[in-house]
Image (cartoon, rainbow, N blue to C red; front, side):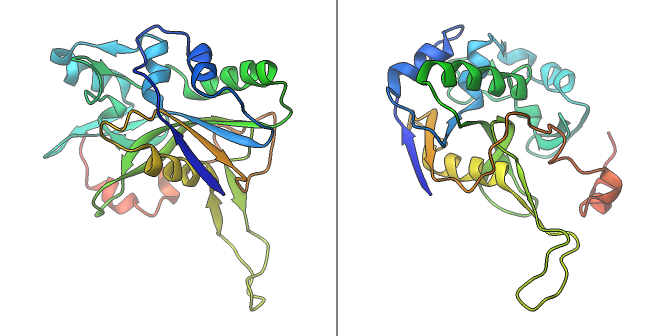
Length: 230
């Protein structure tokens, strides 16, 4: 698998995202996965707010929100994240929210680019940064994706010693998002686009948007959530 970030000029609010991608990536081949950071997708949609409205915006964007020592701990679109993805970094004095619907945005962009580049297979990932419990540093999460199955399911198969696998699944969407975020950077690298070649994915035109979600009752972190009070 080859992961290649793309350095670009600064993307402006309400700018045409498709034209911006074409400007910086003149060629996309069949079977590639294009990663487009959530910030420029949100900027293309005008999803910004004032810095002084931060707390109100975070709570409105969340289905669950509790203030912690450093950030708001929130649940948005079935995913645990800091401050509902609302961020002031690289935002030129504003807050940038997550896209309105990242799955719709990924699917629409995929359709446009497949038509523009005459492709049969193309994946799109819209990533954001995330933090894992009890671990330092940001990794990536796919807040939206299109064109491939986000999960590889091993349940019902056997391991190398013939032992049946009952719960094993690989999270491809978040794994690819993490690989891209690692290369794209978190500071002033100015690399909001990334192209992944030879990704180990299964292509599909229809994505199950709930395939990465797990019921809170079945989540291994449930004991931690039980201690939180909204």
